[in-house]
Length: 60
Image (cartoon, rainbow, N blue to C red; front, side, top):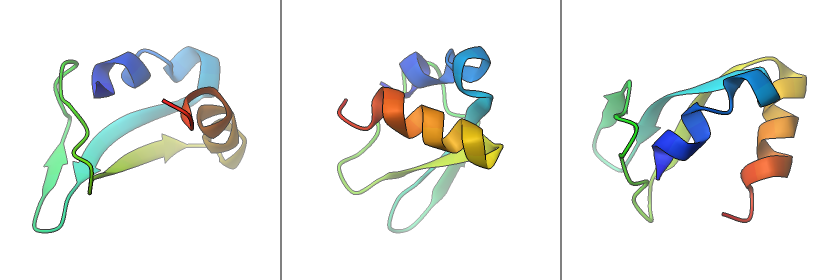
């Protein structure tokens, strides 16, 4: 669920601000939003924060 990652802002210095799919972008996804298989997370933060986010959540 996307919401699990959104709470990670303090740990990663980044925030999930949207979900991109083939035909649309959902901004400010709900905490219980599920990332579709073809979806991509829209992340905002520092380059270091993005790397930390990937380290923490790449395998989830």
